[in-house]
Amino acid sequence: MSVFNISPVSETLGAEVLGLDVSKALNSETIATLRNAFQDYHLLCFRDQDLSDEQLTAFSTQFGPLEIFPEEDMTKNAVEVYHVANVSMEGDHLPEDDPRVVYQRNNGRWHTDSSYRYIPSLASIMYGIEVLPHNAEGGETGFSNMLLAYQSLPEDMKTRITHLHQVHSYGEIRRLEPSIPPMSDHERNSLPPVTHPVVRVHPDRDYQRSLYFTSNTSLEIGGFTHEEGKELHKWLVDYVGKEEFCYFHRWRQNDLVMWDNRVLLHRAMEYDFTKYRRVLRRTTVGGDTPVMGPYWPEAIKAAEKTPG
Ligand code: OGA
Ligand code: MN
Image 1 (cartoon, rainbow, N blue to C red):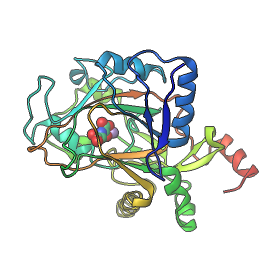
Image 2: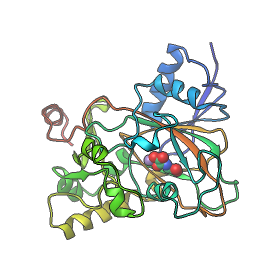
Image 3: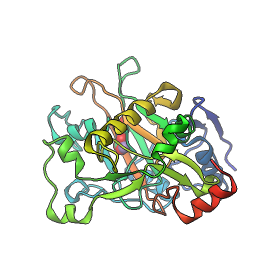
């Protein structure tokens, strides 16, 4: 039996896993321990891992089937592994206006991965290959706890947003960053916009509620005039950035970070793209149900039992 240690990295979210080599298949007892810790801490950081793309994929698959990136030409190398970097697959440090770097800029907006899907992802798993020197400015990944953020909302705001939805559109990135080349008709057609409730209800947490919205799949909340919808969205974006909900992960080489896309938002923190190289690889574990809002029959029933 392997002996490893799990300890929190902040008061808000996240735990560090030390003494576990995840490059080989894990036994069912270890997987169950990790699943429980993931549920409790929302983010697990496995230090000092040495992983090939195949090993990253094999580790990730132990938590569920993996998603495939929507754009055909970006997935030629490995359909389940995304190259999150300002460096090409061949190792060249890319200029700031290269679409692959512009993508990284879009990751700088608070979001949760795959919210543009009707069934968004459960978890993302990201591996640090080249990271910024420890004294460099920026380059962290910020995480914000949406369970905590929802709980701390003023009561009138909770009431105001209970019935709201956001439209999530994969194509939005082209409006926010027009220099990114267009998708093919086939790609666009396979990813029509979807809507999700802004208040997410979690059956696996006694129907607890959290906030669920992003700023990379649209910049407004639906159901208002454009101005009001944008204003509320901006308020939410500012709100979730409060220190008290956040943990900023400063990457060390060979960190493997797994986070819960159902209850966390995340964003890449700015850094000097021309001065520093940054290379990470990521997989995405698919979700298994659509996002449940407060008006789903199960959620209504649960709220009648324990109001609030
Ligand atoms: C991502 C992402 C954040 C980062 O790859 O989905 O949001 O810090 N990355 O690079
Ligand atoms: Mn992301």
